[in-house]
Length: 236
Image 1 (cartoon, rainbow, N blue to C red):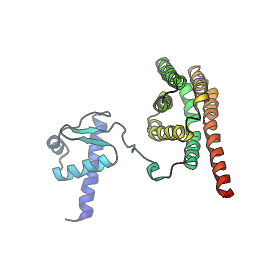
Image 2: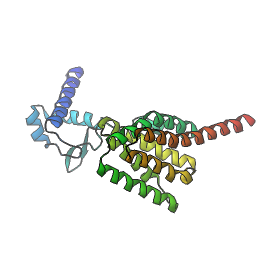
Image 3: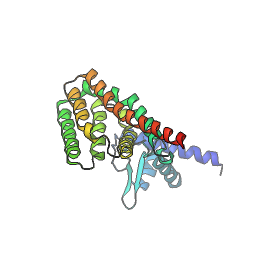
């Protein structure tokens, strides 16, 4: 059999499955018909169907749960490590790069959230900020709460594509806190509260600059660490 012809069939089958998801308005976590039903419905062979499903799994559009079935992925099209951070050496240089990326995205994200946030979302964002503050004041691990706060700001924007960037933001938040050795705890509650207040009063300009201030503190810390490491290295 011609390999290119097989690949074309698989690509076509993948497209058919994506179309089915869209036409049926299947949501993340929804189950697809079983293999026999899907094969009949799309008029494609089971072998081709299996290869198409594998292809869509690698693209994080589908997830296969053994003994249960095939489901629409919770984070469609968003790999767990979209920037390949797993293979980049951790340290101040990577932390600075991630903060720079956040500075390109999150200030505008906060400004947009301030314009679009609903009354119910204001309540939820306040709850998340308060949970973060409690952990900060108690001296407990706050990485997850910090990431959830920033992710919810993205949700308040109502932009589906923006929400797909959140795995990268979560990675950046986690790495920053770990690499700092808890160096941001003292100021973090105040900075997050400033962001919260600006968004909840629908102050897009205030939200933008509160986020810039928050991220610049992080950037300055790692820029200093990188500078000190160069000084020590050159002094050897």
